[in-house]
Amino acid sequence: MVKKKVAKKKAVKKKAVKKMVKKKVVEKKAVKKPNPEKKIVKPLKKPLDKRPEKKKIPDKKSYEERYIKTGMKGFDSLFEKASGIPKGAAVLVEGGPGSGKTIFCLATLNELCKQGKKGLYMSFEEPEENLISHMENFKWKPKEYIKKGLLRIKRFDAIDVSRSIEALLSEAKKELLIEVDPVFFPKDFKPDFVVIDSLTSIASAFSGQQSRFRVYMEQLFRYLERNKITNFLIREVSSPSHVGTTFIEQGEAVSFLSDGIIVIYNVIYDSGHRSSAIEILKMRGSNFKRQIVELKIVDKKGIVINTNKILKKKQKGFNLT
Ligand SMILES: Nc1ncnc2c1ncn2[C@@H]1O[C@H](COP(=O)(O)OP(=O)(O)OP(=O)(O)O)[C@@H](O)[C@H]1O
Ligand SMILES: [Mg+2]
Image (cartoon, rainbow, N blue to C red; front, side, top):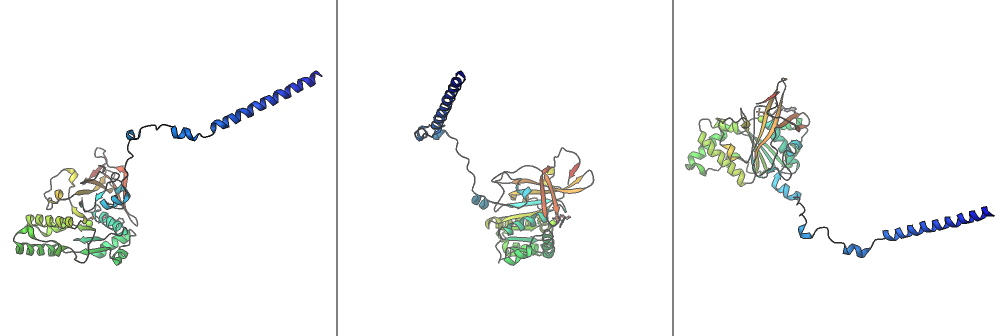
């Protein structure tokens, strides 16, 4: 009897506990229900006028309108965000013999043609076939671009150009009135980008006529500026600008006329092996990293710029030439 009573009591208690738990769950569920009124009343964490303005991300279109990309990832990443080589800029590409000036410019030309822009390579050194074959060695397709009318590679004779300028100058009397475009640029091709390879070759054709070369250079820069043509002007220098030497070579006047200077160095390591390095020395209106980084020319690939490999001047073991 007693056992039965105890069992009954336990059963009642169990039922009561179950009821309690159920009630609590129901209550909890009720609390969880969203209160739409509460949402509306909820005050703003910060008044609108005190909130920091969202950073404006420059839209892609305006970046593309303002800057050009070389397509060499390592090189392009030397520029800070929303910065680059300004469109229409005159950029000197200078460096020692065999450092990679021509290939660097061809790589940029190739990239711009890939983007559907028109590029002109004016060579005063290597013949057209050689330049086309260099490009093909990197698996680029210059002949396709030539066919499409996007690319033109033309070889000029610097002596011919200097003679024509001489003739124009003596005709014009007032030297600053000469026009460079009839001598220099193909009339039936309006490029977005021009490479001149090299100013050094043109300068040597003006030997002993330094002042005329200067006048000619000024005209050339003005022509390119007037026509908003972005241009890379190659200059071979025995000692790059960073070394701080004063140029006695013809063509020193172009440094201050240019909007940008890209320097390609020949590097010699103590181990005896050679390589190249690149630096943006100057780029008006642009924000860039001031670093000298490794540049490699790789067959079937092109130019590889390794921004992780910074050549610090204090670090021993190599020399820039
Ligand atoms: N397909 C390729 N594969 C690997 N290396 C190459 C290839 N083509 C060229 N190079 C290397 O790139 C180097 C630089 O060539 P580039 O013609 O650009 O130099 P440069 O600075 O214009 O020389 P220069 O002062 O004679 O005009 C060459 O010395 C060559 O060794
Ligand atoms: Mg060259």
